[in-house]
Amino acid sequence: ARRRTLFDEGLAVVEYLEALVDGWRDLNAALEAFDIETCARRCGVSADILRTLARRFAGARTAACYGRLGTNRGRHATLTSFFIEALNLVGGRFAQAGGDVGLRPPEGQCLERSSGDGGGLPGGCRSIWE
Image 1 (cartoon, helix red, strand yellow):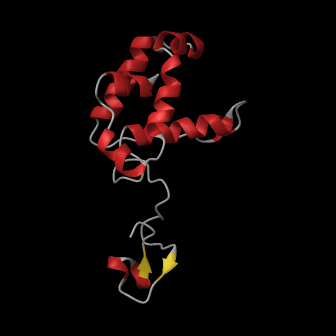
Image 2 (cartoon, rainbow, N blue to C red):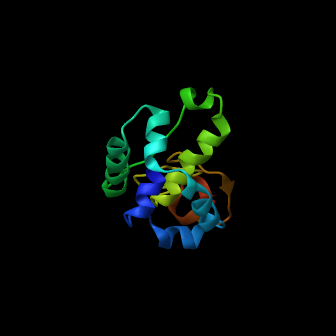
């Protein structure tokens, strides 16, 4: 429902999706069948609240959608995790400062060693994003 609001109201970061996400248009088209009112009834949350959450997510200086133990133990845990990251992608928040850190290592740690200065990462580390 929030993804739909982001697209319907022009709040989706299409430039980000175009640059980084293959198949995003297919996913968006597949989700068109899910209207906000139906999602709201199934979730037990009003459609207005879902729209407001989406607008606030898109308009915040920093924001991220996370799922932890509760979503990971549910009936559709994998699908839930997928849609959480999809929301971060549509909102341009995945792997961005102030958003979902995605696959970035914790500050001061590295995933791979390099012989160079590592772009300022400690101990000759190189970011996977370079």
